[in-house]
Image (cartoon, rainbow, N blue to C red; front, side, top):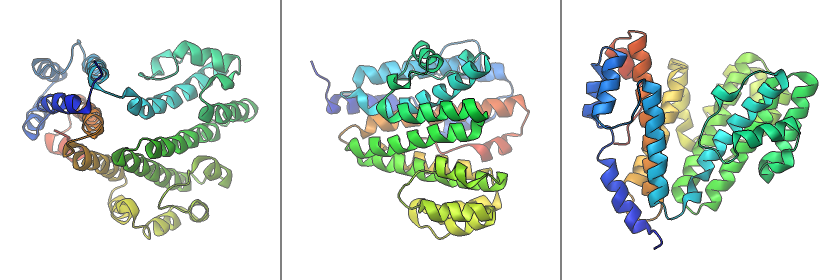
Amino acid sequence: MALSYEFSIGSVRAKEKSMFSLSDVEQLLVLKSEDELIRYLKDKGYGEGNTVDEIIDSSREKMWKYIKSVAPDFNLFLPFFIQNDVHNLKTVLKGVMSNKRFEPLIIEPCTVKVEDMKYIVENRRFDKLPEWLGKPADKAYQLLAETKDARNSDAIIDRAVLEQLLKEGKNSRSAFLEEYFSTLVFYSDVKIAIRGAKADVQKYFYENALCECRGIDKKQLIRAAMQGSDAVIKYLEKINDFDCRKAMEIYKKSTSDLEKFIDNKLVVLAKQMCRMSSEGPEPLVGYYIGCKYERKLINIIASGIKTKTPPDKIRERLREIYG
């Protein structure tokens, strides 16, 4: 019998009850050691394993198994996989060309198997990749082989996936996914321009890396970036889309808080458009995003415990939660 969204929504609403609450976060913040964190996560049924990383991996596997079991159309989740494909392509590309191990850096789930990716790179058969990625991958390969310029090689591939995410959002017929990927791509451009200006990179890099998207005039942003980070911020302060003005206010006070602002914006967007939705695929997609940021929360807390960071300082780094 075919699955229905009515069934998946009822199921995911029950699942959401086991997600971290603000009370859970406060309990996590008082833990003193990694062993205590491991026990807490196991007692909550979060995942299995003897380390935090193993428990997180176990949780991720359980999440995907569950989503596959209740999703009427699992293809809606493929755009999230292609981001892993691009990471893996860049990793295998550098590993093969430098004759270094790359296997520990591979991310799953992905749509292109690791052994297939290795064959594609070793034999320069980029026509075996999805159409949107094949030509950029070949161009990146050639650039890396001729110049050893990993930054510009990565930029070519990164822009390809940003462009594809925008297409996937539009083709999904989901208002949430279109807005989610538009926001993600917009702030990817913002970070590329800011970091590039600080590193004083050449114009060629921006042309390779920046993606045309709502809210940004690529030519104007490149002109600003070539003048330095102050000019980039001045340009971005004029943009109303995606709360960019607020983002720049935050960035000028604390550069590290920009990442937190972007993460929070994406989580809040999911809470507004998915948590409150009563039809379609959004509740299930929102659950996936909520789980993703739960894992980030655990990593931040685990890192704080390892470095003996005071709970108040760890709390400042935490993102919004979906639960």
